[in-house]
Image 1: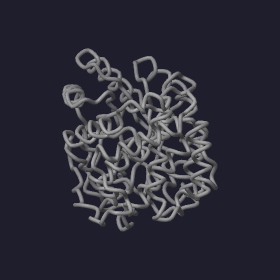
Image 2 (image 1 turned 180 degrees about the horizontal axis):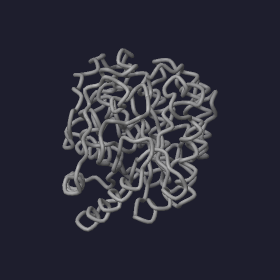
Image 3 (image 1 turned 90 degrees about the vertical axis):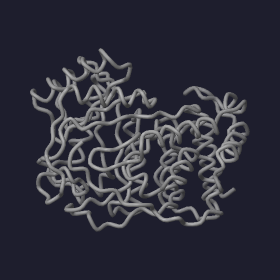
Image 4 (image 1 turned 45 degrees about the horizontal axis):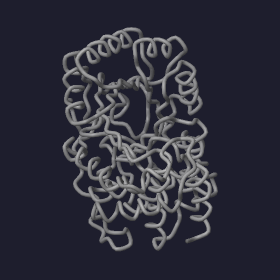
Amino acid sequence: MSTILEIAQEKALVQGIGLNQQEVYELLTIDDDHLQDLLDLAHQTRIAHCGVDVSLEGIISLKTGGCPEDCSFCSQSGLFESPVRAVTLNIGELVEAAKQSEKMGASEFCIVAAVKGPDQKLLDQVADAVVAITNEVDISISASLGILNEDQAAQLKGMGVSRYNHNLESSRSFFPHVVSTHTWEERKNTLDLVRANGMEVCSGGIIGMGETIEQRAEFAVQLASVEPDEVPLNFLDPRPGTPFADRPLVPQGEALRTVAAFRLAMPRTQLRFAGGTELALGDDGTEAGLLGGANAIIGGNYLTTFGRPMERDRDAVDRAMHASAGPSCCSAGASAGATANPTAAEDTAANSRLNLGITPVGERKNTGHGPLYDTLTSL
């Protein structure tokens, strides 16, 4: 085992402590010969500190398009010539989407709106939606409505929103290359308000927007400092008409290194596959990532792009949980305060690959990124 993997094993797996920026950088640049070892260690760490369960989440856009912000990756900005048109859903459509998510095994349903921040009309719509959904569906409600003030955060908590998403998107140093209409600090302040008002914090970002590997490591430790309950990990899906339309896709090996490194930077955090997973990882890479640090996935379609059918995501989750289950998992110490058993967790990782039929990364052939998905013009 390489020196950096030994350090990561002691800190992240045994002690449950996240790695520092230099250590994360070394993992992000680890050679191909040690990539499978890195994925195994990330999986061991996830099993030890988060358990074997894999979370499935449904997501719906209450308001799509027409956003006044200039996030360079986003086809919902009203400032770009993208094919996304403005659409607003009604309460009945939201309830039906929540029912479908629950039917496929999702435990969480996120209501999203393309706005800089919510006005009172939007908050009232969300409040009505939360009541309507929870009256008919047994599912946890989260929301993503942009930048909040104190009163707005308190309202969301009062209406029953349990978790709030607001992505930092990138490292502080790279953020000015992504957005000019608001600051990284404004986003961070929203996360502080979310925590102060008793909601769980969900914050992640997008990999592959042009950041350096050093900035990717910076991003991981800055996210860790927020102590998020959940980190959605997106890979850039270049959208037509946006400033990042011509950016290259993240290669599969690089994406897998990122998943594992972020897990070892945040051993106890829910790490969720989100947009662009199909492009960067493909089906085999997604399942390898679920055995390489990730323990959650957004099922079905995203906000403006097609994902995989929810059934395939559900199947991937079931397969990953089945592969990770076994007597050794229990002894690995799934509770947050438990002391991990490295030997038991190592056995779990090896058995997981065997049970799932995953070929070690070094033995795989490059099958490409798979098909590009068209932009949704309505939901």
